[in-house]
Length: 447
Image (tube, rainbow, N blue to C red; front, side):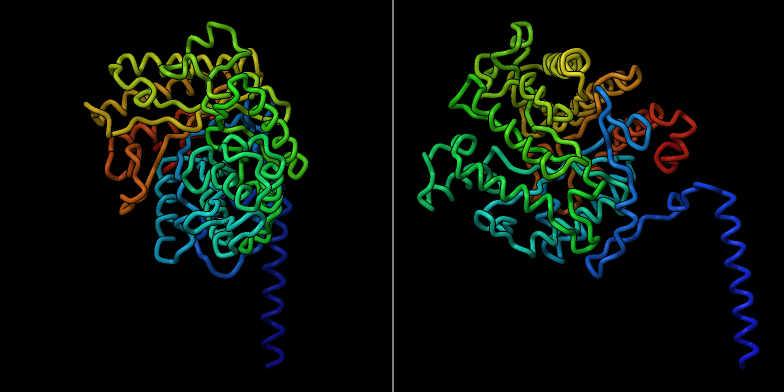
């Protein structure tokens, strides 16, 4: 028996020596690239080494870079990921969404990292959080990492959904410290600004219970977004919103210097913009920018890239398809030019969409408009321009009708849209890796 154990040990040592020889002869070969993504599990934590060893997405001038190469984003919005990751019976939809997205070559997802005072609230009251919901966000981050997807996490909502700035104002008013009941006091009330800073610190320093990494140390997170579509209608000069952006951007960077940061603006030009830019503002936004000022907001030193939204059917409600197409092309092109010439920062179209609820809607109209967005991004990428990518609003998993908002697309129900998305993924991968490299990196997508 003793002799048999010694023989086994001899063979084990011999095998280990061979492995070591191969390892050192291959130098920096990263064997992780050959490993498949692990299936999602909400159970015991796995070592954080895999996530922590990933490179962070960085900005160099007007372009994003990942691992030394320009990084161009074909992405999507699924705002509901944290919400559905709370309950065990809805978590499979989160997994399904990531699998579907990766099958189309999508690399970045924008989603909410807030839920203030609403159902399944993350923040129950100022500075008080539901650990159950925080663990759901942990699951989303881990799931994204396992599928090779980066996240843009939005930190607050200008709109009322999931609490929004109105909930912060309500909390201050109920506690007797609010200056006014105006929703815009979110941006200038000292007590509310302190509420938000507490939330920011709690979120950024959160240690993921599944990976052991603090969020601010996790490269799965591509960027933080201060607020979804910030507006301050009470101050059209833009000064109030600008001061808030500067203060909160500096606060985020004081806590986390590793991640990129964006504001979350829609792209409306404001008082500091020249008239030719103001003329591009659509419809009712032409005379009223709602306190936003795209170029001024995006020039804040702590802001790494600019964000733009575009909804031609909402903004030009009675326009023809051709008029919507012309406007959308002009809108995005103008902001990309700002990134190239004025800002020297990347510009990311973080939301774009066409609602099926508009009169005369046709699925083919979506294909036309979305292709136009993709073409602008691809053309800019080919010349090394500022267009960093685009994220459609929004994708949903099957059986999620209650989350549909007119813009939702279930990929399996739209074969032509799936083909369009895959084509864009392959085109951007070809800019990054070359045609042959793209086929190797996205073999099941670009073959």
